[in-house]
Image 1: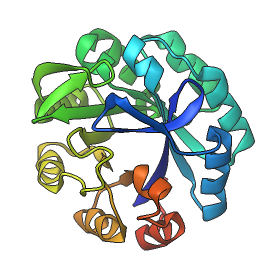
Image 2: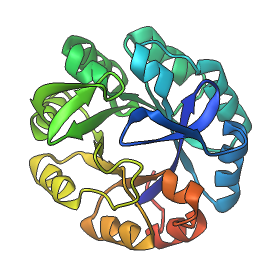
Image 3: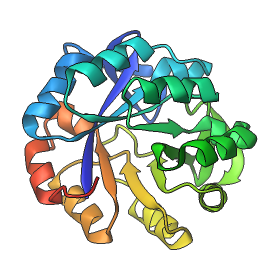
Image 4: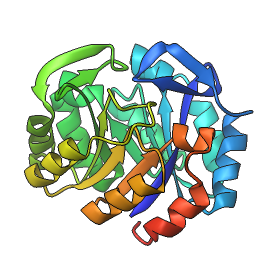
Length: 241
């Protein structure tokens, strides 16, 4: 299993939210580049980056900063937030991003999502963020009527290989991920699944690994010290690319 430390970007800063609420934003690192380098020093190979401003507005706000992170840090970077067209995907990939995440676009513009999956294959991940089992969009401020497993099945039919699943009620709470929904998602599709939201400590990493998940995204737990990234990477025995 791979462990992906997370950097959420707002106004050029490295921040965290609680349950996706923008009024809970607080800075958690000196700078995004500093945080990324600390992850490298701990042994991380992957980095999960979300452009929060982009997710809310539908337009990337931090492409240049993300480009600096890619250039300066020896990490495979996956990026989400504000990706709404093919040009944005192409620019990210050309600038060294390993994987681009489609979240809201998968719901709001399925034709684009299908086109992107066809054109870029495994370089596209689908982010499925759920409130009470229903997919949320636009920086988690809107909720669709689509059940998270239904969206996952549709994306798999269109060629998605990697899904990133977040139970929004768990995000930033350090209460553990939603194991029940992750298990249900595993049974619904054969895609690689990355768990996101709520991971607290090494016990959560061990449980996710035991489930056979592809990856786990860790943010607040690292910044608040409830999870030692180096120990998490060792426990996960990161061997999958």
